[in-house]
Amino acid sequence: MTPSQLTFALLSACLLAACASSPNAEKQAAMADEARKAAGSLAQTLGGELKQAMTAGGPEAAIAVCKDKAPKIAADITQKTGMQVTRVSPKNRNPGAVPDAWEAQALADLERRLAAGEKPETLDTWQVVDTPKGKVFRYAKGLPVGAVCLNCHGELITDGVKAKLATEYPNDKATGYKAGMLRGLISIKRPL
Image (cartoon, rainbow, N blue to C red; front, side, top):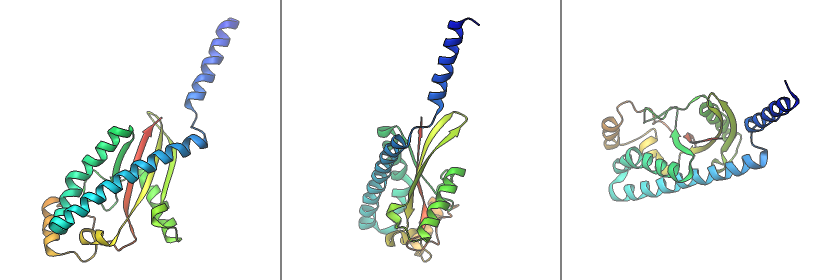
């Protein structure tokens, strides 16, 4: 190998190594702030839609918001931010909303923090992970169960809600919660 070929090979290896490294802590914190804003936007927009539906038609009307509007809201935020935004839960309604291994671990960690006394609104976590397609920034924000959530997700739901859930979500697992529990996550992925 000639000296110029060796220099080129070393520079190429250094460039590849730099590209393959994880973002520094400052960059990760900035990405977490962006993800936190996207998660907040989803929660706020969905919350507003749910409040309107509850006022207009009660809990039965709110079920349609979660089924039809929530995925569209997440898709809009995904399009605006370039981050993949979804909601997942091990006790899911939507069969496509099952947590992957990273999300399941994040939820378990957030539940431990909640049990240790951390406030639900501060429960989030992030990490850069290696995937077969490259590094991905992962972010998870806990979804705490509020009092209004118990109308459709609690232990004692009305017959009307049960009937609507049986129609809309025949394999529903998302009931039996108590206020303050985590129902799942807002999950965000950003390829690096």
